[in-house]
Length: 496
Image 1 (cartoon, helix red, strand yellow):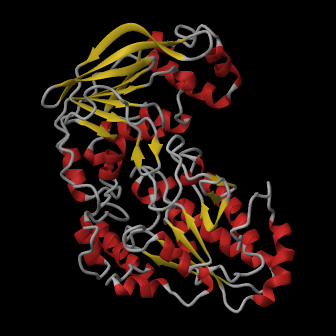
Image 2 (cartoon, one colour; image 1 turned 90 degrees about the vertical axis):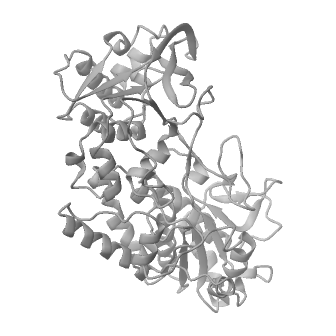
Image 3 (cartoon, one colour; image 1 turned 120 degrees about the horizontal axis):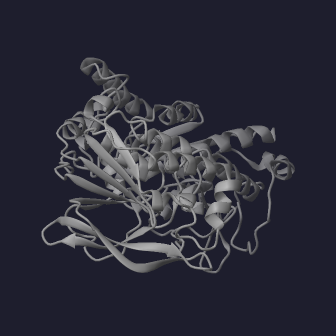
């Protein structure tokens, strides 16, 4: 483990360079290397997988024990609570991650809250290393007047709602608005718009919880406006997801031809260049231009995709009644600027989807500007810029909310290479993790029984049974802390 005197970080540590050092010192190890991973989403479970694989590749006989902690009783993070229910191919990533949890060298400890049930200092005393991989759990704010009016909501809350997150009251959304504005042109905004535009019948064969499906069936939403402050060439959604919006049988889709024109609001010509040179942009632009040429067919719902508009005010007194937008364009340097031309959309609900943001962990360094943990190749850096012994970070908390789910795999591998290089000589006398303290003893003193992987299988079994009973496909998610706790055989917990 890196000691207090470490003052620099090797620019690149490969598994090959780590192996000789571990091989030379392996005789000093009298037990397995113990690592705690905080967070059981893709970043956390890819980290656990990388630990197992890289330790095995060393060929030194060094053993590894990985405890994966999560405050929820359910694993998989955003794969379970962030991927839209009708995107089953993406949700199938859970099958891959399940194999990681079933490895005998990995233990799942659900229902354990970092900073409350166990502190940073206690984890460092129990393990040789701790990897923080809690992801990004909140939406960025718009920073406009009226943002806190009833009816103005973070898209994360809406996504958590239709994904059955236990923190969200199933009655949170009544969907009594006739028109909804979704701010943002990324894949999350597309998911939210698609779920709003679909009928309950179209979602009945997904794992949407029963109370959510009932609310969707009673939805009064007839217009959905997806709004981006830049143009089609700068939008972040993927072409496949974008195309799905135009294939919904119950919704017409429209785009203003002027807003689909790549040059109209971009004097730099960069939008047109991207439309020709970038395959991803070219695909998006082709879909958007097709929509701009369509004539509405009178379907039950209308989905309008808007560009070159930014929200400047959410209007209302007791609740949202409208959204004031300002026309934008690029200046000669490529920056977005307002034109002073306003437009008011009569909407009764606003969902902001302008990016995820990580939140600080108690006792762990945090850069408020980037909303990430300061690090060098996964090594957590203290206020003095030096690595903090035994502390590592992976995933969005390490690099910000960028990339796709699979990006976390290479990201985790980099962090694990750094970790193994640091512990190559075995735990030294300053490494508290080499002592007899065990997390189960720390938790037992506080009367906390973690949710095991076997307990989680009880939840999964109940959800599969519910799906079969209701004739709704493979599974239907249980809704709320009480139902989850009952399914895994434990009493109410502090999170409930």
